Amino acid sequence: MTLDWRLKPGYLNEGCSDFESVHILLGYFIANRHSATPLPNKSLLTENEAFEWGKGKPLEKVINCQSDFEFLMQHPRLFRNAIAIIEPWEHVGYNPLGEHVRASLNVAYIAQTIADCDSILFPLWSSGLLDPETIIPVISSGLAVVVEGGDPSVRDASSFAGSQSSLADLHLFVEKLLLSRTPTSAPAIFICLGHQLAAQGHINLIQKAVQQVLNLNQLENDSSGKTLKALQNVCQEIERIGNSLSVQKKNGNIVAQNWHDPEFAVGPNEFKEVGDRQLHHYESPDSESSGIPQELITAHEVTADEFEGVIDTSIEYEHELNIAMFHSDEVNEEAILFANWAYRLLHDTIISHRHILAGSPLSWLMQMPYAIEILCSTAHEDEIVTECSATCINYKDFESKLIRRSFTCQFHPELLSDLRSVGFRKHPEYSELKKDDGARLFARLLYAGMQE
Image (cartoon, one colour):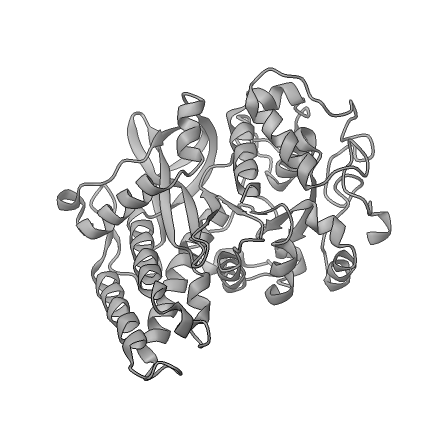
């Protein structure tokens, strides 16, 4: 009920939360592992003992229908000073205790505890997909967008049976979100299923770009045809590599023959990963033994050298990072190396032709990412299991050359090692979160994204 909503941001410091206070408190939290909370000593469970969405403050803001969303739009201060949490499914899976894990609760709890940052929930699995053209501009003007995980598989549309949002709906939403990162927009953090949806989104967007460019006969104001020819040349090269790039597991199984295969972006993992895993720096594959074209590997090495992706440097800051994993599918390394190479190729080609494209049906290409970096991998008994455990999506402004980032991770930084939702466990104190690798990493991602 929107009648119960707080109309001013902040719960611990009631009505006094804003961008600056949240940003400062995030920075204070990640500065060390021992300082006490600077926020008022108030429990988040006072008005919501079970800590459940829609059952009381501070979890009262749930967008269950169009009227809830319309009420939110009437109060811009609320969405501009909050995290928008997108739930593709009602939970992310079952932990070893047999409890379903609603990880969005942990996102909200951590953000409120460490920075008094409010959260607004969009449960797409129950509300259905409201118009993305309306929702995304609103949530992108907030502090961050977190696309949570879910129990179904991106590889199986039927696994979403019973949801009010189909897999196709989620793909549409994520693709539009990937294109929404602007100099004034919020960063997006895609977790687990969200990480996989983002990977498929990259491939879908690149395929749509290639198809649209190759189907054009001319561009208005491109009298010489140079712009279209340049774009068609690179799109033909992208299509050629995409049609020949297969995805092969370490056991020799080929899970995708080319980029049109439904498991090109996301495939089955060799092992189901549940519980704490240590993050390792990503290491480039060998072209000869992996069969991955050298130009894709080199393009990614250039991206890794050019940018800082927070998670990779966090491994250095914290010496080692142990993060909760909870999945049986994985984003394929080949797909991300391919997407990074293709994005860079398209961006560099567009640079000298951007004034022509800006007034054409291809203007949307300039909203695409510039590059993607694979940041880390996870291992089982010293053997790498998930090569692409996290990515940094880099967007480069054509005029200012400034970089903006969003992040994806297969692991759950918002879950503690027991893999329990906050409502099922003793709620963690600020001091416990201070020492937790996942909570610290989640705070770093929010902090870094807000600086852009």
